[in-house]
Length: 453
Image 1 (cartoon, rainbow, N blue to C red):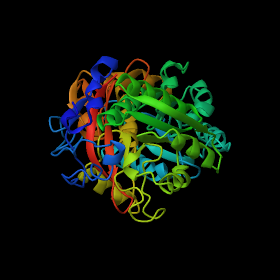
Image 2 (cartoon, rainbow, N blue to C red; image 1 turned 180 degrees about the vertical axis):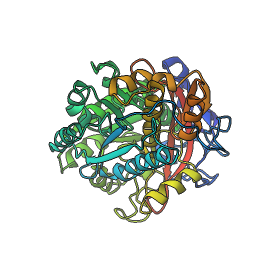
Image 3 (cartoon, rainbow, N blue to C red; image 1 turned 30 degrees about the vertical axis):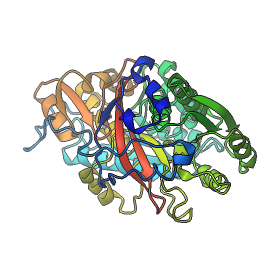
């Protein structure tokens, strides 16, 4: 659990185990070793914020998983219809910053699958299309194009709101929709014919981690500025429930709509409530909101962000603007070796958010197709849960497909952490990474929390 001795007395009321998710403190990984000094503690003291010191050591790993050191045996079944995967990921719109790492993750997965001989004796083809955001109809147009090209699965969208506009179109066509980043709890009970899957955990988990973490940092009151869509309000609900269950009080909740460009009213109302901490549940609107908040004397150490806006702001803000602010992103920290592989695919990468989840989506779809001996969407979907649990652990396509072709059951654990699906297509266990902003407005990993749903 969190080191409660470093937090204010209110944090002693933290009750993570009692609110439906087991949070086990794990160690920090990734390419950067965070400082052992807590940059936010002293500057935030006046606001009562004193977060736990960064963890040290290695993060989530797969050292016990099978690896492949020899040639991959040929498939005993071949296909006349090669597996074709589409991607519906953002290159424009308010989540465009997530597009590059997700697309790089997909492309790395495709490369490694094809380097290992492909699926059912044939190379896998990938077709990329832009998802845009909910202000446009780009996603519908892109989906229509992908379905017209005969894809068996579509990886995307990143935005829960965008996915809601196309999920019926995709699954209604008998095609798998596999999102690496959708976190809205609504998809758990969606009527998707068993064809909707995701490697990102529901915001039931991210919300609990963030709500509990703010309490652990000593915040007794929280204000929230929230995007009024499926993602924003779903995460808002779970953050609030967790924070109040831990003994805190949410004193202000201000909504805005996609497409809004003025946020002074929301900021003024939240600041008038004088919260200890402010949670920003937004996409790139944070570029406009953060200066409004810090310009009125709020310390960055009082700011808590989420996966929709935890990004590189080194070119957007003056140095120090976000120093000590923190954010959560589902998934374990990207490890050095994985980052190097991604950079070989896209040397311009700055963020790695959801790259692991996108890479894992490619591997899981490909392995399920091998297990099903079919490239048809419904056949692949019927094997996705099976390849994620119960067998011999493996963490690469080459290692896993070798086991499958030897007649063995597999349990794929990926770059995003352990992947074990529920019947609804949700991960049942996952890591949530906690990151802290540095003086240059980039973020570094400080700790990660493991939870089961």
